[in-house]
Length: 111
Image 1: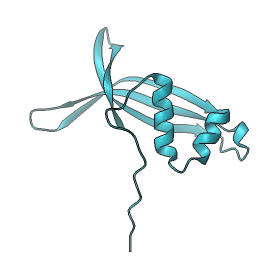
Image 2 (image 1 turned 30 degrees about the vertical axis):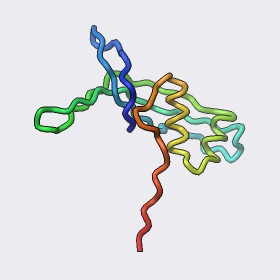
Image 3 (image 1 turned 60 degrees about the vertical axis):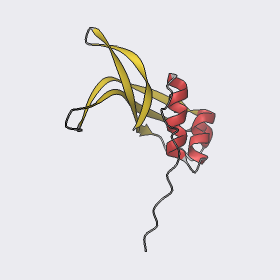
């Protein structure tokens, strides 16, 4: 989930300002040959509002899919920050701008 600069989305007969983006893989052929790899990514544009009691309400206003394959799939597969990489890739494809950069969060070490 990533906060985006608001964009206008037509839904249910009117304009709304989507301000959040979610992305997940819903199909990946897990090819060992990177040039033959392909995946389907599911995304949502959402409106998140903060209520008076400081709770959040999330309304999904658009759902769709993206396909990733070929050199893009290989880059995603080989990048150690693959989650951040694919979020940034999808944002570029959809002309979305993140409010704060999506980066890899270092794993927490346990002892």
